[in-house]
Image (tube, rainbow, N blue to C red; front, side, top):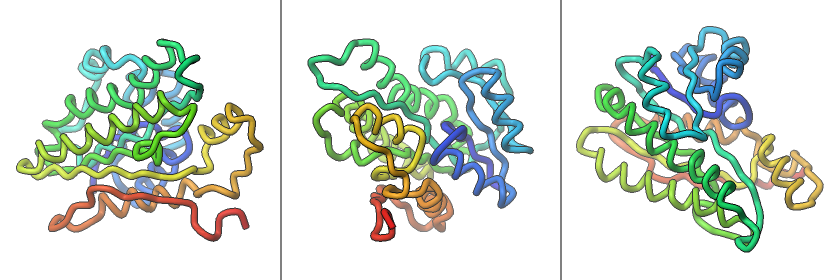
Length: 233
């Protein structure tokens, strides 16, 4: 039985990944931003354990986790949580920049640092669920795209550093996916949200499981997922 630490399990891709792993009998540790959210996750995912730590405050992650019980080994660390606030560079505030970078980049780096010893023990895997915006930046997406470009750099550097320790690192780059975040993005863009046009979160979850279930003689570095021909039907 494998042990996974997951961020973003409360909705969308993270929820789909957590359900798949729980259904097959794996052990889950789900990160929640506060006690109320932790209680909600525990009720929705019976048998999963919860950890309380706010990704929006990376400086406090070490303190928060030091007061909770972590497993001695972690087979995969799955970074799926994220935030997106759109706007032109000329109008983005430092508050938006700082929150976006904290949640999408600094917190994943810090959380990875904190559990690297457990990942090394198991020769485990780190999966960063990135975005198409981690490869290309469009107008009004500067803060989000910058955070995701940085996440790609983090993954690439980590992979090079931890290869000798046997830790695998994968980045997944989904296109637009039918999640609550996507609905929010559409509102910011002033567009009608039609979830059937976009990727089902379960399809991205299948991609994440493909990466972590790959035999140990191979490693997937980057996976790009885009809406298929069935989308929109």
